[in-house]
Length: 184
Picture (cartoon, rainbow, N blue to C red):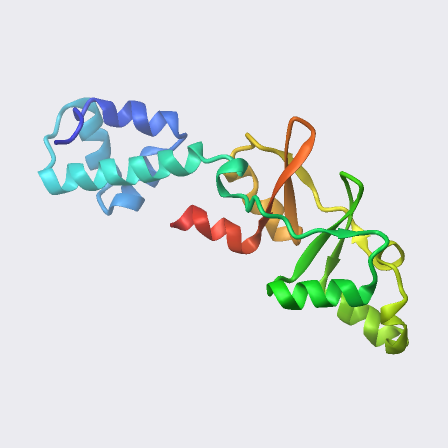
């Protein structure tokens, strides 16, 4: 059983959707959405169901938080670890970036791209000796556990990963692959 048609406008406004955008997402005209919301039109059950499914989907996406999609098991490296340690960890775990910590504080990031660049520019025989503190990239952004997922999408596009904190403690990491959980 579907909710009352009168709730469509309220749900649409709650998630910040225009009538035009809702019409586009549901495959009906903007005029039809306007008529349904004003009570001048009774849509078919299939059309009403489609409208509510789109609204529910968008509402669940908009209410997701960083803590909902982050990976809680964070692979970590220390500033004293070597480039060799980083390569081994990344290979063993099949990951492309690892945050670097100094105690409990995130201080940098090691990425596949950064390692390749370093190896191309330097003597490969030094990789067992070189410390990550000397070659790491800047620390990734840190967001609060309750940060809405919508705000993270553009951040992930420009950063290799985002760390998630709760009560000033790093509790998770979000990578581009974690953002696919939004689609699911």
